Image (tube, rainbow, N blue to C red; front, side, top):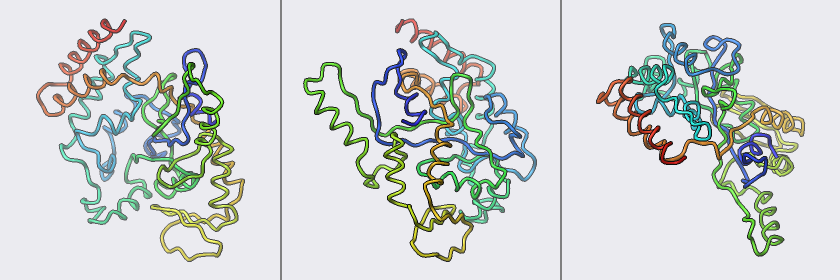
Length: 322
């Protein structure tokens, strides 16, 4: 199993409670110009860096006031402020209030870099601006081996995987699970259930659910079947493979694919610790946060009042779920 998948499905007692056939990773890319040698950052560091960008620099494509919290924190970001097991409710912290104030200061509509002079109406010009270091952040989905080699094309050779804001207990790169399987302790036919699970975890990729196989052996077999011995060309927007050399005019990475490329990718994926799925912020709490944050970003409340209201409502939720 990949490390991040094992973490995702491990409970407090160290046992696996489920398993997925595939997974993807979602993170943020930046460059050394903006984040230096950092391998991670806190909410305060992120807000400080993004608030002081040089002239002629852009924060992130499609970043607007209403989607900013989700785009900048990621799926696990609210775990920095909430932990039911520890009774943590940090939604009225200075860090959270400063983040709210920053998001409330952004333009109402998403920032579409392609509509600016640097974009000139062409989406491909956004890629050029990102690769030249004119854009501070980019969302990055990691779904196949080729994405490891695509990142320098997207953000330049000096790119950094900075991730979403993180802590010692919350990883800044999110593990996304589309579907997972469980076998109950009271299953009447465990042998048949295990055979079904083994089949589901190793069945060939149908193309309907892209992702990295949770089992390294299955991921290796699937990747080698698709790309082994092929000439692989990785561009901004896609990947093509051919038994014969091809002419590619757009910026690209060309590989004579071998098992060493898959191993490099596997080692890269294992560098991410992952986050336990059971530690995610409950839906009820997420609804509370979303309600209050939306009111704040629409100008109905200020960040301090918003943070206080979230803290009060979450305190009530915690008391009701002790």
